[in-house]
Length: 150
Image (cartoon, rainbow, N blue to C red):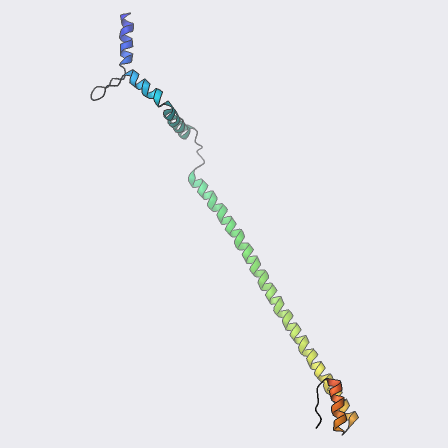
C-alpha cells in the first residue's frame, strides 16, 4: 500500500522541474483541458503536412503548369492575329485589283463614249452642212450640250 501511495505522489509530481518553475500534474492537466482544441488542430495540421503531403505536387510545379498554359494561350492568340492579318492583306490586295480593273473598264467606256460622240458629231456636221443655227440645234439635241446661237 505504501508503494501505491508513493507511486501516486510521484505521478502527481511527475512534471516537477527543478529551478525556476514547479509544474504539477494538475496544472498540466488543467492547461490541456483548457486549450485542447488549438493543440489538437495544430497537431492535426502538422501530421497532415508531414505524412499526408503528396510529394509530386509542389508550388513550383503548379507555377510551371500555369506558365505552360499561359504560353499556349498566347501562342493561340498570336496565331489568330497572324491569320487575321493575312486575311486583311489578301482582302486589301483583292480590293486594289478590283478597283484597278474597274478603273480600266471605266476609262475604256469613257474612251468609247467619246469616240461615239465624235463620230456622231462628225455625221451631224456632214448632214447639216454650213447652216450654223441648224447645226447648233442638232448638236444640242443629240449631245445634251447647250449651244448658244449668236
